[in-house]
Amino acid sequence: MFKAPYLVTLTLALIAFTGCIVPGARLEKAEIELQRNDSLFVIDEGDFRFRIVLPKDLMIAHEPTIQHNEMEKTVSIICGPSFHIIAELSNTDNFAPPTQEGIFQLDIIDSEDYSVVFKRLLPNGNIHDYGLIQETEMNGVRYVFQSDSFGEYSLDDVLRMKSALASVKI
Image 1: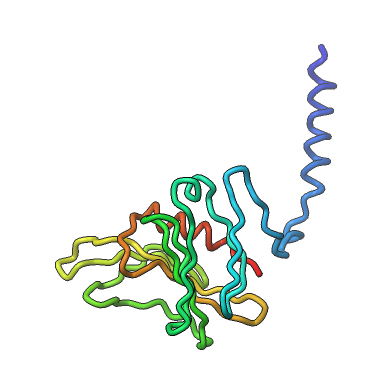
Image 2: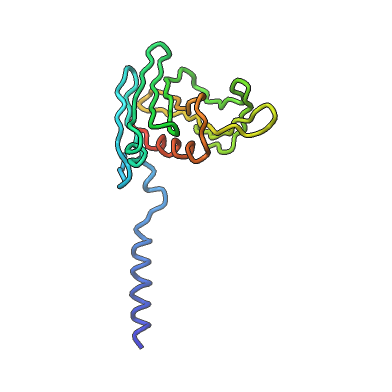
């Protein structure tokens, strides 16, 4: 007996809410939004100036450190053995993911515009570990971020680094 007015009201409310959603209206990049489990980490070393959001549980278990290497012009963000990102300034206009790294053959498993997740294969074809390389441009400065090639990371570790890199802002 009361179902019809209730359904009509619910349908009108649903139409009103979905009518407010305009496709493509939020194409601009939002400011960094911290979630309950996140911590803002500010990098201000040499030519490197950006912010990155790191998972708080990772920062509780391992104190994050920054290592600035002026000779190599790199900054390393380290937070325990499973999180090590190296940032360097890029001087090329073309982003090309590598296909080989020392003795390892690289097999790309996920590739988006300027972000590549790959697995490193031993010469016998077995998987050694996973890695990440990403290029980001901020205020006319190009940065290349990559997992440390001397580390051994699981796919979950690499995806966690990729998630953190998605938050990088000036």
